Length: 68
Image (tube, rainbow, N blue to C red; front, side, top):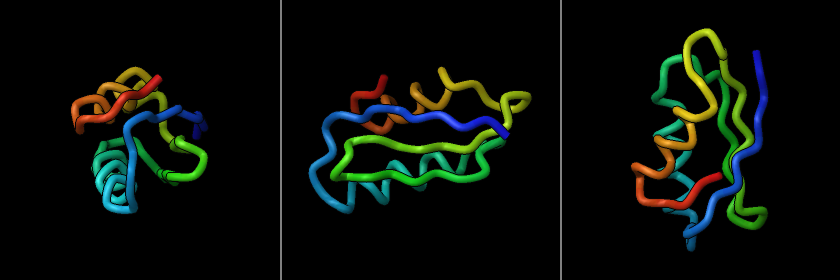
């Protein structure tokens, strides 16, 4: 299992956190996703054989947030 931290912009409330957490957890290969509004980031545990970090970033952006 790989771990990464993705910086997220545009979150303003716990609803945003819930939305991003749901999007990440729904992806094949994601084992865990912890999104922090205060830190403005997501900590994601994922299987690199099933999903790439770029795919995680793209999913967050597709949900309407800035990610890097």
